[in-house]
Structure formats: C-alpha cells, structure tokens
Length: 238
Length: 341
Ligand SMILES: [Fe+2]
Ligand SMILES: [Fe+2]
Image (cartoon, rainbow over all chains, first blue to last red):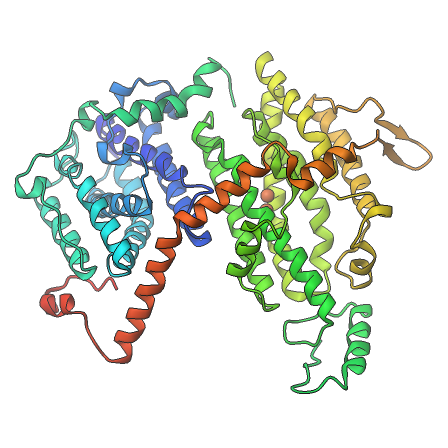
C-alpha cells in the first residue's frame, strides 16, 4: 500500500470532522426522536472517518484541537451554522452526494485513503439516502416546508463549487465528478418539486477558499467552542 | 398469559381480575392484548411515560458537552451515549403505545407539565467531569433501579428494559473510566472530578425516590410485580456498590456519616435533604425551566418538519392508490439514474 498524501487526508478529514461537529449540535434539538438517532448516526460515522484520516497525518487530537483556524482545510460548506432542519438537510444533500461520488472513486486506489473510502462508502450511501428522502419530504411536503427547503438550497449553493477544485494528491477527474454530482442533485430536486439554484455551476459567484485555509466567520466561533477545554489543560490526557 | 379481554360486557370482570392476579402471582407476563385492570394500565402508562421522558430530557445535560468534548475519542463515546438515550426513549414510547397511549399524547403531557421526568436532570452540567459523574452515578443508579424491571409483569416493558440495561452498563462504565482518567490526571483534572462527584452524589441518591414510608405508589406496584424492591432497598444497594468504586477512583463521597455498618452488612449514610428533593420536584430546581423549554422549543420548531413528512406520506399513498406518477418523474422518464423515492 502506498502512503496517503497528507494534504488530501487533511482536507477529507477536516470535512468529516467539522460536519460531524455541526451535526452534533442537533443533539437534543431534533424535530422528531427518529432524527435524533439518524443525525447522531451520521455524525458518528463522520467522526469515525475523520479520526482515521487525521491519524494518517499525525495525532488526531493535536490536529483537531491545537490547529489554528487558517490551518483547517475543510470546505466552507461544512462549517456553516446548522440553521433550521432544511438547512441541515440541504447541506447533507450537497455534501453526502459529493462525498459518495468522491469516495467511490477514491476506493479504487491503493493508498490508506482508498482503504478508508471503500469502508466509508457504505456509510455515506446511507447519509445520501437520508438526505434525499428528506429533500423529497420537505420539497414535496407542505407549502412551508417547500419554501424553507428552497431557501436553504439557495443559501448553501454558493458553497458547493469549491468542492470540485482539485485536491492535491488525489487522482480524480474533477470535471466528471462535478457533472455526475450536478446530475444527481438535479434529479432529486426535480422529483422534490424544487428548483436547482443559480450559482457556481451556472457561472455565478461562488464562495471558496476552505481548502486553502480561508474560512467564514462562524468557523472561528465553532473552533473556539470545540477547542476551548482541550486547550485549557495543556498536555493533559482525557 | 393469553386471557383475551371480552368483546362486550363487564360481567366477567371479577373472573378476569382473578385470572390476572393469578397470572401475576405465577410470574407470567401480561401482554398487550390480555385483560388487565384499568388501574394497572394507568399505573404502567404513568411509569413508562415518566421513564421515556427521563431518557429524552436526560439527553440535554450531556449533549451540553458534545461540542466541547476534549478528545475525539471522548466525543465519539459521548455522542453514542446521547444517541442511546434517544433510542431508549423510542423503545419506551413504543412500550407505552402498546397500552393504547401514543407518543404524541405523552409528549403533549410532558410539554404541558402534566407528566414528570426524573428530577436528576434538573441539575446543570457545569464541567466536563459532570459527564463522567452522570455516567458513573446517574446511569449507575438507573441500572440499580432498572435491572429488576427486566422482570416486570408487563411483557413489553420488561423486554424494553432488557435492551436498555445492556446499554446502561456501557454508560456506567464509560463514566467511571472518564472520571478515572481525570482523577489520575493533572491536579486541575482531579479537582474537577471531585467537584462533580460532590455535586452529583446526593441528587443520585434521591433518584430512588422518597423513603419507603412516604412512597405513594410503591405498595400497589409491588403487588402487581411492576416493582420488585423498595426505594430504600435499592438506594442501599446503590450506596454499597458506589463506596468501593469511589475508593478505586481515588475520589471521596461528600458524606461524613458514610461508614461500614458491620452489623447490617451495609454502608450507613447520612440524612438526605428531602426538602431539596421536593423543591426540585415542584419545579424549583436549577434547570427545570430550561430543560422543559428546550424540549418544547425543539418540538415546536420541528412541527413544520413533522407536518411535511405527514403531507408527503399522504401524497405518496394517494399516488400509489391511483397508479399516478408525479409529472416530474414522467419528464425524466427512463433516463432517471436511480429511483430515489
Ligand atoms: Fe437510558
Ligand atoms: Fe444511560
């Protein structure tokens, strides 16, 4: 097995770490008990993936708790505040569709990332399924849910373009990945009576920079909360 | 037990009641379709609902630390634990449903303040060590209370408790292990652990309920084989388990009267502040309002989501009744990659 490229493990690991954290914010706040279980399940899967990926680069806790904001390589999409349930589902739809297609490709390789990807692809399949089903229910549910879901899709759309910028060390055909992702999302949204937002895929302005360590304002606050206790006790073990 | 309720008339009630009592006395399980006294049903609904509510309200104090867990391993354990509690809530609401009371109804009663949950969750989790103290003491007390419920006369409740108790013992162990790491850690970590145990010890003892001579429901519950041991018996059992564990943890319990009573073969412990217990029960604990408000808010903010799911399900049912495909599907026709509906 070939060594995994550290920059790639970090980018993918940070995506999973940060999204898991944001999903963890739902604990005790979900709209229905079944979703307490489902969102926690997804958060736990992602945290598991993050721990494997970060451990390929170094000590998982040092990387999670002692890096400064500018050293994180996650997409800006995953760091956005959880918003209402529609925002969380829109994010899950965008991200899990991306992760599912990406991991399917990465699983073909012979690095440690490939090994992780081939295991995780089954988990991510469930994540995408969960997101797509909720997209249908919210989009084709009531007038209010339709409107909220459309708003959430529109608001987060600007953060999707960044996902298809090449990650150093990964041999992926990014243009094809983007096309497949766009197809998938288009299909789901049409079935859910929702409209594909205008944005990066149609040439509009796109946010970005997460992969280079440029993040959005809410991220610093998220890290402050996440890292505070660990940093307050330098050198302690837990 | 297989005594079915009569379709009409109540002339046989006495006979059914005699059969029911005999079954309970013979340690047979009562199942949902069996005849049972109304008071037995009501008592079970009350107890199972209160238990279910405790599971879901109990998620809050620990979820309070998920976003601040100091290592990724601890974060994963804590998330899994809080998720388990949601699962326990689900099993228990399902058990209550077998008695004819829906989850929605029970949640409404909780939100309206007409049903209670365990008072222990009205205390705040102030530091990370509280997560450990809750696992060790609160889940520990829950296990002591709940293991006998695995033999409860009502089948669905007993079976739910078997599943729950397995997970509770993992919860207790992770709490103990968390505290041990703190106790053996830096001075500040040790102090954090000791402080948490000081705050959670007495409320944990109150979890077993009022002393036997003041317990309102105990005698009847014992006769119905819902309850197996008295509050004071269970409390004593818990203290006897905890004292040596505290020693292994290198932590003390905040009770100067705690001594081994050679004669009784049990630990003697100091007086419990029942005034505090009654105050918290009455709604005057540090977090009563906060806990119920968060619960209500989550429920209210989730209303549109639940409505959407119901509306969508109704549309789907309607479509399948008429063999109808949504116009969106027809547009795509066979080019659709995968059917996700
Ligand atoms: Fe539980
Ligand atoms: Fe528990």
